Length: 215
Length: 418
Image 1 (cartoon, each protein chain N blue to C red):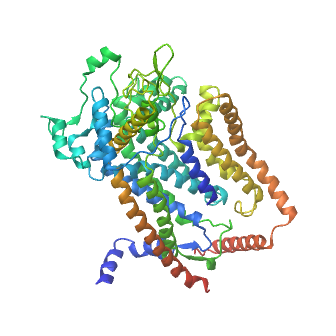
Image 2 (spheres, chains in turn green, red; image 1 turned 120 degrees about the vertical axis):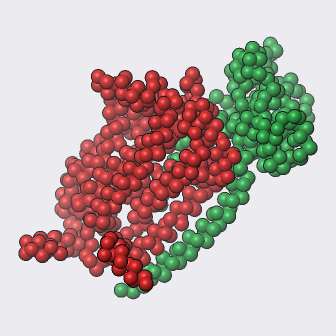
Image 3 (cartoon, one colour; image 1 turned 180 degrees about the horizontal axis):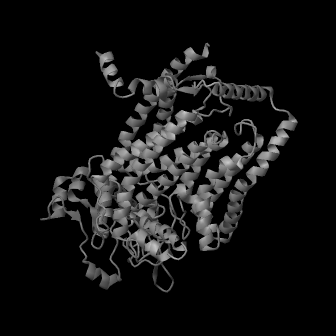
């Protein structure tokens, strides 16, 4: 048993290669609908102009619980099954940034640190004394500071931006794994059932073996 | 009616005698601990992987331009596709965990020793096939780590004398990992599990000839054996329950834990990920590969490191029966070996630095050293244990075993085949 635990710890620990460039601010994403919806709105305003979410369709937003009128307004004359493609063409993006902005559907899974990485990155912009904007998490980034954290000096404004970033990341976390809430819900039932079944199997096993011990 | 049907079948197929021989009257040592559950669990995970894999294959596209999207299609649009996929991906790790524990048990209790060498070697063959299946399966999501992992590993075949480059091209079906590689890996990933099932049948036929070993390391007398059914069917099912709880905690609550972030980025032949890391179950062997400075040497060392286990029946020279429970040096060596494996796993998971390189060198030397020293240690241990005096319990067991051996030899000489 001891060995098993040690091996288990190893297999958990070994797959994590800790990001070494900069320390991340560790956050826990929100999973409630209001936060995810706020995040969606903020993403539509701040990110969607350049970034696509090609694995998310307007239908997925409906299924998530977003109001039908709002979804209809967002999609315009696009069909419900249409994905949330970016508004910037690849050619225009290449001209402006020299690369195509990455799709955001899986962004919170595709970086070491997950949601904490994206959150820290969004808030990682700062201005050097000579007026150049840098990002402490991803120095080579081509993305201009989307939320304006580098120029925000008012503490209340900074707090507000932090909340915005947190909501955006919550929405992205949902988008990367839309079934995670369903998975957790189902998981409790499955584990509960298995605990019950295993207890029964243990009783059966003991009952069968009890006859043997008398000999 | 039931008896008539069974009678009808029995005249044409050995159904009743099979059930009797291999289940209801199959003699199993009564002192087996829960460490003996893992063979059954391995069989269960194999069935689970085949079952989930068949359904995944109905929705998956083996095409370099569609694979990544088709996995997301499974995760998002297919009914309970996320469950199938997480079960399959977690199942791969579960398979290796179960197999490694199964092997560790065999090493600890000396179950590989006579007359079970063929079990050990068929198991070794099954391990190689499992590794090949897992490696090829990992290419299928067509993420960055899939692509670059396959590139690095197929590239190792370059060290083949004379035909190195040709062999690499032949394996990939192209000059680099590409669509041709993906389609053949998919085909073979679907084929190999069925070869594994065939191998498992051979493994089980051998088992039912030599019967299970047991913690004492001695073949027990008939009175210490109990029928497999219902005693071990009930025990195995209880163990299965425990396994499923652990497995489902991973499937439902931590399915992404063992997935590399880089594999959520589609394969890009133009961009190497910062660090190419294999799945956890290959890390110790990967560490050995990287610990040898020369590429040919590294590949040979890595191949040998997996194959070393096959030599165990020859390396262990002791006449003291069994494994760690009777032999303190085996026990000590076993734990040191496990710790060394964990160290190698740590080295394999981290980028090459002066520190990991040094630890890797030491752990690699220790890895092979522990195998090469076994003949000498096992002999010295035997002398030491006999000099110290064997426990009366062990002596009695050994004497009984010797007695039974002479009796069965006498029976054989007199022509009684039973």
